[in-house]
Image 1 (cartoon, helix red, strand yellow):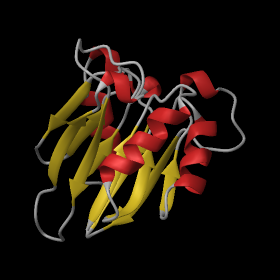
Image 2 (image 1 turned 60 degrees about the vertical axis):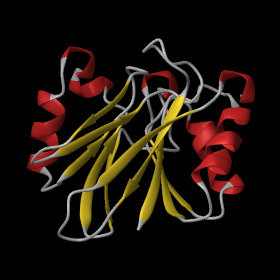
Image 3 (image 1 turned 180 degrees about the vertical axis):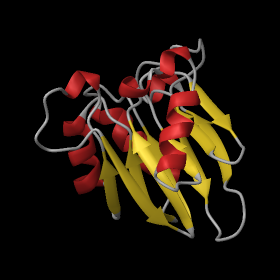
Length: 164
């Protein structure tokens, strides 16, 4: 089962559209890791699938999304958060600990605008930013292929700057 993961779209609706286009029709669920809840709501209407969303630091306060949620899909349990409340700019240890406390085998976050895939007891994924990357690369999002009992297969996909 494939899920799409996007974060830090910051009001760029064209980036949301491009992510859905590049993600393809096989995506069963989109995760939006915050910074811009309005974009996650647009994603809900634009994509032909469900969307799980959280608020980011730029969304505060938001009555439309929590700071963190646990999503169960494809035999995996995922902690979805923006990351700013877990000090992710200084490392992912607090995030991993929170995932373990929630019996999650995956954690998805944003906030840093830097794509990351760290497999392990808790697989950690940051899709980077679909509109404002800070890793000196092109904007990005991720696709995770989930199979129960197997580690997730994760692909970071880069978007051509002139496409968004």
